[in-house]
Length: 190
Length: 245
Image (cartoon, rainbow over all chains, first blue to last red; front, side):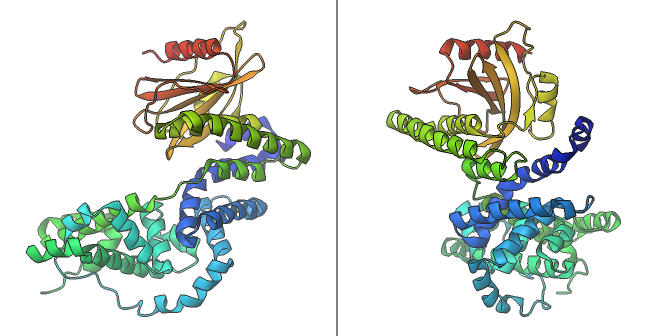
């Protein structure tokens, strides 16, 4: 893709055009992520716009071969964290970090069918219930299908933290889905 | 119950994060461990559920437009032109929306979006992702960007139609191609999506734009233009011939 642009020889437009081709396909995913982070359509829109402006400015410092997508998500998230909503979140984040060492996947019999039949609204509610630090990890892993390394780069946390947050996020989602009244009855009846 | 040594690797396995050798060994282990295989299945279901539910919000088309304006290299060349274009497009959009809303029902969502997209293209300082009059340049540009392919008609030298370029667009959360042709002083947008991704709708238009829609080979085509209806029909025939297998 980049080769055809180089062939045209337009050096001054090269970087911007490259950036556009790399970045615009990420816009929808970034916007979705921004909505989940901020919980607000206008704020998400501003975050995405600011992310594109910042990343275009910093594009010359972006090293080829490093992960562009993780870089974009990182800029979006940092932009969010310095926003008003983000600052509020930082002040309440402390509790999410406690007890991260003690992780084990639940030993009880899995209720695969319950998860399978859970409707989209229920799962969305479960995601919304997650502490933000867990929510962003699971969105990047399961929706954006990022590798752990990518997530670690995007969120600026160690890989071990990615894994433990992911495990906890899934545990909590699972419990939420299985614990809703309709589903509980099914568990009890079994 | 004795805890299985593999238990803590379940997340890594489900996320495809194990080394190939360990991954293979884990797969073998699943044959003999009911506990782990049930847990893996559950985690996979959970992942799938999250993937579906988390894709909740789509970026509005005007956000695409404004981001493109922001990052376009030509952006600051002639700001007054840009602003007048925005103002003109806003007025036009309002007129179109009004004309549209006043005559259509809920099923007009896609066509309405595409008319908007066409107007955004008309007003944009940077209307194409790929600029070329050569179909052998425009078509390959979409490769890898769309989950389908299509053919573009070969235009005779004396054809009134000229290919101007193409652009990646979204409607109802699905990617598609926008191809822009020129006929005399008018622009024509041809939109192509996978038929299962968008609801097919009768060819409808409004007072301002001609809309021509059809399905062919599993793809949904739309033509949106302010050119004459005959022009839209002729371009449609050319596209249909090019995509006949």
